[in-house]
Image (cartoon, helix red, strand yellow):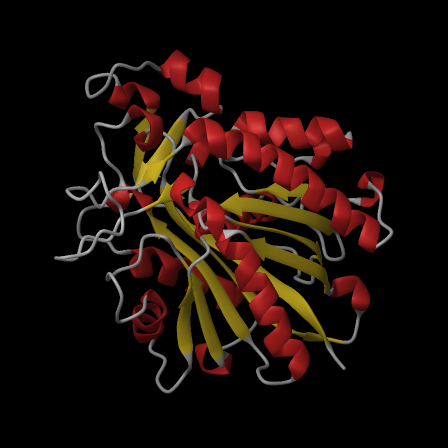
Length: 331
């Protein structure tokens, strides 16, 4: 049986860089307040005419090129997003495939919010290792700015737009493989982080009937995220008999610097092991991990065979972690 390999990584960031100071005229906030509580300094917002699939296709093209493949070699497209092009259909994956020029290629969205990339990895790994597909394109594509309430200080300063993409292919070398992926969910906490869907006659989200913007119980999410991620990361390391010292890079979901540092400190990761991009991009949900991975790849730091520990926590509530050897070649 073949192993699944993360063969390439790429990302795309919109051109509009938005500093914390831009929110000072909209809200009772400041650059200092935002940095102290989140670690975020800037984020990028897409233009009004851009969709999540437009961001995703840019990252996807580069990921395919870096994998040494043609677009026709892609036989499955998976997209993770909390900011889809349309409410329900067509899927963002279908739109992205069309923009790639693919026809008759199965394409679908996975909705796991900020855990989206880990869910994409788990799904692609299963498809490749079963032999069902050979080259799976996974894309985290987010236009988070399209689901934000810019009068809500607790949420709108946290998120940014962007996309990250990877190609997952088979390998016989376990030292280039996606070693393990663990995903989980608990829908009993669904009201901690959600975007309402307003349909006439629906009482899906009482109290927020007039808003389809993202809503979050920030303190509750913060506390549960730290507790859950610590347990999840410890379990995947123990299950694979791997110690923190053996990890080349710890690449967590980039939501909040304080959450990342809490997990880092508990597991005694060194500064050089931890990849941080939250200060540049904010929380880009399903795109954040591949965007962070791409940063160190383009800096020449990520090498073939490097062992990465990934973890994420998001709406659903969903969470997951992964141990991944980088199977790609250097820039």
